[in-house]
Image 1 (cartoon, rainbow, N blue to C red):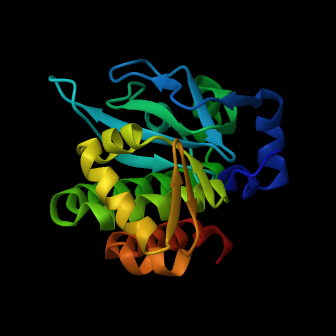
Image 2: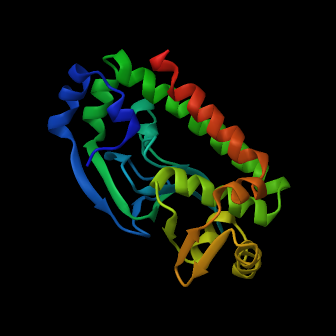
Length: 232
């Protein structure tokens, strides 16, 4: 089922030009869509899936620099003209996405119209997320960052339960698993989340928002501001 907000925001005439080329695909947990330096052949519009943009260093260490869900698109360099991705792009929450050939989307993008505007505004919002995440990773506690990450994951998937391991969270947040264990334990003791192996359930969203740093609210407001521009 189509729930991607960028596609749903298109006028019927623009959507119908894309519709014959859109294929609904299943994305599995841990699936790598692109490696850094890879040519982007397909672009993905997530529905309920969530995808991470991962910076990978020479020593193999990783940190998540961006998250893409149902309000966005994976593969933005393709329509901006860069064609290559600089990050590893990996599915962190399984679900579905609408897949399209990058050349077809690029052709439609250059026609102008609402699609071009929405994709540019989304890219601006994503760049805000990436820059704010860099500051967040440097200055905020792991517990606050974990709360931010869980809130964003809930927003993107529309689900209180997230299938993910502590090892994967540690890789995304650029920290050790032991630190994630402690942070998740504190949230669980406070009755904010319930954690069992490979599954986190958010029990108290308001308390989770109070625990998260200001980065969550800042990024969300910017996405709401930019992606609602077309309706003003």
